[in-house]
Structures are given as structure tokens and as C-alpha cells.
Length: 126
Ligand SMILES: [Zn+2]
Image (cartoon, rainbow, N blue to C red; front, side, top):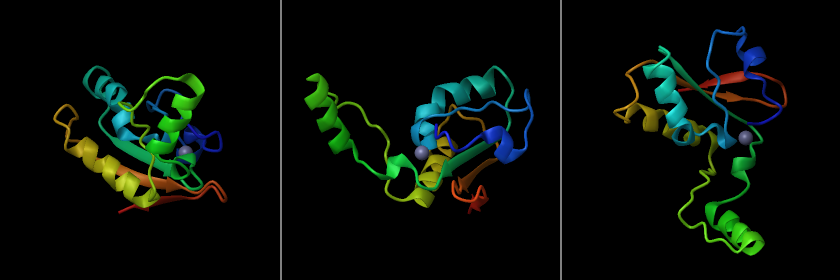
């Protein structure tokens, strides 16, 4: 979701070559619906997960955001997880595992990367 990351430029891909699913934190769980459609109906056979440095998801937790929403809207949103994380590298490893263990996701190459918003570099997470 971050405006400092433009996946087509970062990865050198052209229009029509990839499905790009964006959300806050680049979380796999939040992208499941789109990934399933991409694989099962449109033939995608590889998944790259890209999170980035200086991510806003590192700056809050579910409790704080639920409290803020409750104060601002009077709604109770305890059933919602906003999927924040406190370890960037681990968040990617976790997302890879979530996809690999989901029976609805095809057994395809799934790799994870950290995009550095300061210098534009991209590092594979092993
Ligand atoms: Zn982010």
C-alpha cells in the first residue's frame, strides 16, 4: 500500500505480466481472496511477498487501533485484526508460511523480499 513502493518499477515488470495485490503491510492473510482468484481462475504460478522498511505496520498494535476506533466511532471492533507486526523480517516469513499451509493456495514458488524505501534496494528474505 505504501506510496513509496511502485512494484512494476522495483521488479522491472511490464503491464500485463503480474497481478499486484496491495494492502496495508503486504499481509498474505489479507490478500487470500485475491491470490486464490489469481491462481485458480487466472493461472498465476508464482507468489512474491514484498514488505518494506519504515512500514507503518511497525508503529501500532491491534489493541491501540481498536481503542482509537472505539473512541472515534463508538463501534466495537475487537473481532478485527489489522495484522500489524513488530519484526519486519519475521512478518514476511510468517506470511510465506500462511500461504504454504493454506490448502486453497497452490504449491508454487513463494518468496519474500524487503524493499528499502530509503535506497530503493530489494533484499530476499531467506
Ligand atoms: Zn507499509
